[in-house]
Each structure stands twice: as C-alpha cells, then as structure tokens.
Length: 225
Image (tube, rainbow, N blue to C red):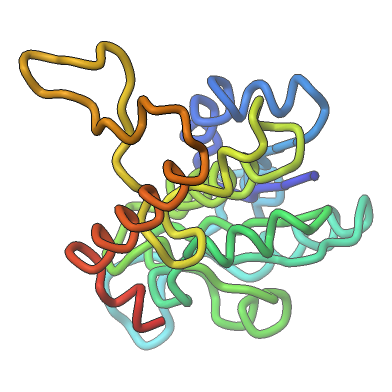
C-alpha cells in the first residue's frame, strides 16, 4: 500500500511512522508513507498557502491553488483509490472504515490546518472525509497518523501474528475481552482458571462472553449498531 499525505507541517508526521509496527511495515516493503509539504506548491516567494476568509471571520484558510496543484501533480504518479480529507465534520472513523481502507492500494490524505481548506477543493477532489472524533485538533496531521496506523496494521504480513487484529476491540462491534499474562498469581489476584486449563473452545467461549459483557457495560451503543 502507498499513502501520500499533504501537510503544512510534515515534521509532525516523522515520529509516528518511524517506530514500532509502522516502521517494520515500511521496512518489509508492505507500506510506503510519504509526506509532502504543501509549501512546495506555494503561490509566491513568501511560501504562502493560506489566506483570509471571504466574508470575514477569525482564522486562515488553505488556498485552493496550492492544494489543487499538489493533488494534480501527485495524481500523475499514481491513481488513488481515495482522496481523503481529515476534518472534524466528516463521518467518524471506526474499525469498519479501517478494514475497508486496508484493502486499497493507493491513498492520498489531505491534512487541514487553520480553519480548514477551501470548499471548492472538497467539492472537486475529495472522495472521502474522515473525523477521528468530536473535537478539534490544531491540524489534520495527528488525525492522519491515527488513520494510517489503524489501516497499516491490517495489511497482511504487517503483524507478526495476523490473527491478532481479528480480536481487536471494535471488530464485530465488540470490545476486546480482558487479557492476562504471567505470573498467574499477582499479589493475590489470580488469572481466571479457564485460561490455564488448555481447552481452546472453552477459552474462545469465555472470551466472547467477556467481550459481550464489557461492551454492554461500557459501549452499549456498539450493540445497537
């Protein structure tokens, strides 16, 4: 999978993709993530990519020309399955969306900044909008990193144990069950006996019941979905 990200602050994206699972995914050649500084397509020598809003109001807006030129140039290199805009007013990102995006080959992510991007870019270029939650960030970079991480770990071969992702929270709209490791007795608190008896079917049934119970208690809205 290849993911391009257009941003005005590429430095914010250096660390998330330089460590742990995302780093290994790129080293294996399973994932390529490239950040592109929007100022490369600035309209003047002052590296301008934003301007005041028509109609007045606080906050700058990313101009259409730099973004359009950036997208047009990148589209000459590959065909994108989705051109994604990170915005708090987009549909909320969830595990099902991550699953669907993990099946794509090429993604382009636009990181908003300031008050966002010119509406005409949204109308003419964007094929998918994503929000990572009902709150506002300083820019779309951290949100883009969340999406890339959630999607990238689902690519076959990225995780050492590919079945691990199948039992993550939100798969099948259930939260993950509690997990335990050694020691079996920690300060008088013991691991549930069923997990130490070596019966896979009983363990699977116990985990499902625990997932269901935890979801009912903490996120009953997921069961409604």
